[in-house]
Image (cartoon, rainbow, N blue to C red; front, side, top):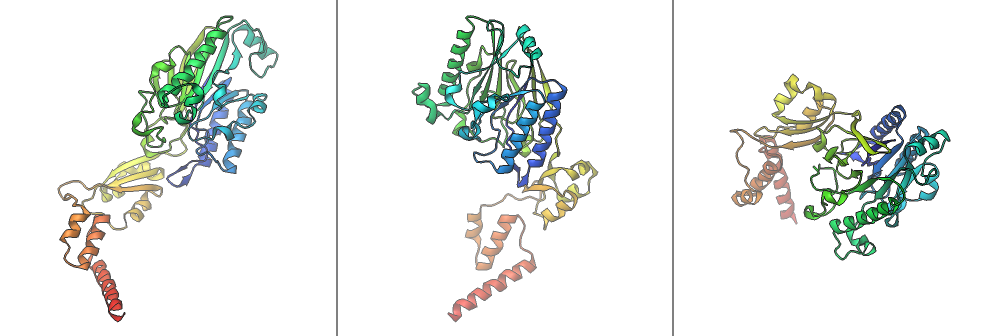
Length: 406
């Protein structure tokens, strides 16, 4: 069997105000083509299918289309919910969808109810019979058991899981213990190879700016040894594809959702499974619909140098290092880099004086015009020009005269 580990689709998300639905459709096209060409048996989606609990109609339609096309390409889907999803809404009609090869694991009481796939001769028999999946053949042969741990909010599930401390560690430990108990029970009569989907922050994972913190201060991280003993753990939540151990990995998001992911190679993991257990795991890469550029330098250098020609068609985050903030900086930059989405200022070099606090500037101002010009200098990093100072002076005089006339 072949499993494709994905997660964090975040359907409906935008990128600094730019809608990403077309880029997400492109990813779905790549995914379906890969599933068909590589004869993938099961697509795993480890949470954060949607970007918000109440997705738009067009976003729901995109997921519906994706599931129809994936099952039509010959794969089944095992899907669990993440912290961005509404578990109740995502899990709607789960029993009906299971008949079509889409297995949803979004409820707490489904933690130890795996999706079963026969391996070895039984799997070959089912394929020959045209069986869509599930363990319907020999009840003693080797089997792959895929479990789904949805996003667990500690305060809401601690009591149901029988733990006294509402922490990510305790609820995740209780969840994995339930799964181990089920694996142990099934293993009394047959060989069971286990795969676990979990949406969580595991220790050792490298985060990026586009993930929502699971808890304050990082206490939401759970140790890797909670997943010991499982054949493969398919994690979701962190957006960079990474290998925490041979058997514990993040697939990462299929698209970049922040500039901190500019150097990521987006993709997933293709996992081979047979009657002997988990075999080769190899990386899968998705083509990015748009490059991301994180540029830094003085505005004249950025506008003139051929070094930055590659970024002209990219989404850009630009930090200017000029000693004084250039006038009309965004307009000038967009003339060369039309899709500049983020602009920052970080003066450096001998001409960049240390920036005084606004309160200290205010204390030094000796009249209203100085206050106004000082504020302008503070917020944009460039003193008011003579023309600007004249406009401010005229405005202040108009206010003064209006006050006298009252």
